[in-house]
Length: 117
Length: 108
Image 1: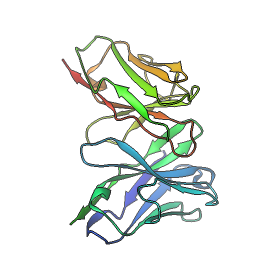
Image 2: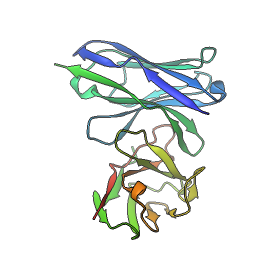
Image 3: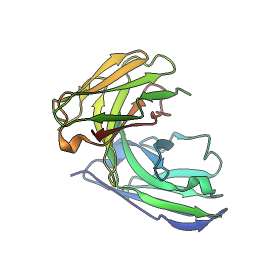
């Protein structure tokens, strides 16, 4: 069974940092591109960041570029999101998402990040 | 950036009735469109990819159609478990696959 389990969320003040982790199991992690997608309270889904299977390519939404860094460890089957310079508008549930050729086919349950002023 | 616009924002439907959800892309995306279902407190689930192909385990009452800029998700006979929020997503402009704002399907 495919599992994606996020951790590392919490309450942080504006300007602070957090590192999110996602532990993957049940599939060959090293062969899949991965993403972070977030959902602000009561709002829709927003793509945050992408990393290729070999970490060779990364992309970021304009809203987080220069502040967030995506990375992965294919030995530990883990995905990470280092977040710095956090803003109130970064408050959201952050999902770890597996990307297939045709869409986001597996999602974690999310980890909540709350940024207070 | 490709902007995805869904309509209506909320759809009130009685159980057993048909629901039709629309999604429009700001530019042509061929058939590179996915639909997701999200229930309260849960992660989204992939329903449809390639505009019309059901994902594994998705019931046949869910169908997708469209190409280019106009897309439709149809739920042929709404079951109680289908009341949820539905999102479309363009999978054309890799890797920035943008979502629509969602359509909430509620019980009438």
